[in-house]
Image (cartoon, rainbow, N blue to C red):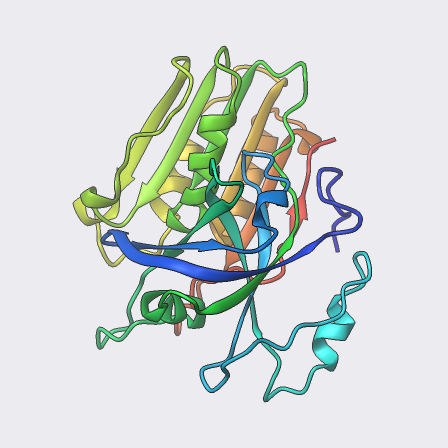
Length: 290
């Protein structure tokens, strides 16, 4: 197990929330906007700020949540009986707004994908697409893992659609004098969006439907990343998404001269040749910089 990144909270806070609205924003992304009585206290840090998402089971009206005692909450979660234990997944803050009335709103983007018969897959995505105002959820703050060194010469980011919310946040949070490159893979051209990135950051969008719509997500982004030659050993890289993109991307960059300590990578999900795993991040495998 990798060490806890230094930008994650030692005593994470749990926020109860409720749905405000739910809407499809692109063919492959569904957005749920939530609020809560103390949501204005959420310590939003920009970049790839993420959280543990707790969702009620389909038969539940109310959430059963674990006791939170610093970082020792997972055994308490597992101790909850299976028939009442909430669904758990990891998600990135897609947007956060403090409003003039003192409340706050938080956006969560869910990747929408279907099986061979066209049925929606992924328990969190199914919940999101059916979410209605007032529905309950909870979020355990986990801070961020993007941890760029002060002496960085170039920032390199690569992801497929499960990493897109993190990439959007990173692009908007980077200092405006940052130099670098973003490689972002998405399923369709309609999933491409404008990123609020510094002028010195080049953005490469890879659209799978223009190549092979049946290709495993992340393979095209990996191929593009493997063609990239880092400018020196002071590059900082952030590579997330399907497991092979994360691990093979890290291997390529290290072989190209980037120290392992300057590569943050995380496999959000793993493709199985027999059957793809639902694209909901599990407990992340993280290697932070520093």
